[in-house]
Length: 212
Ligand SMILES: [Zn+2]
Image: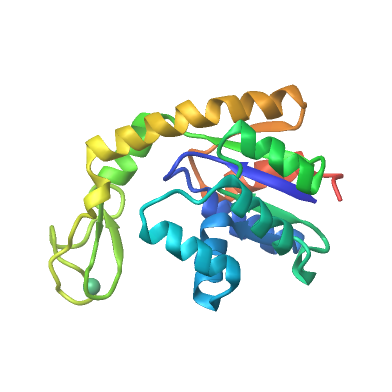
């Protein structure tokens, strides 16, 4: 089974990808993780990527394609894989087709922007033990203080409203054509990304029935 997951930052697709990967015994491939791995392992590609990143450049589609082409040859991809965070634009989607051929499904997790803003702007974390909170949905017992270790909670710099709104805008601009592209191919599955994590998962599993 070859899947692609699409969803804006904060839509929870990473969690869903892990659940799908476990259920169907297919690899969960995140291109961000792949890049970090290449750098960590000091491969030729990794050295190139590190240099580009240090110079503040963007890693080209060619490099990501080459990395993906290699990754899907691994043993854990025999039954299939889930691509998470890729493709991000139509050029990448076309490049992906050249590497893997037809996909089985492209799952798009739909969450309204205002829900994402609310989720992300309300996040707080403990700089000491790493525990995560949300000011409305998962607040600490004492406002602003970690339940576990009593440390003052912090808000990540990226979690302010302006940054989140801006990231969403960029996401919609670049991803809308990708969604169209897969819709035309007849393999797009739109699913509601709001609500119970298990329910979202079950809905997708139902839609995947019969695919090998
Ligand atoms: Zn703590």
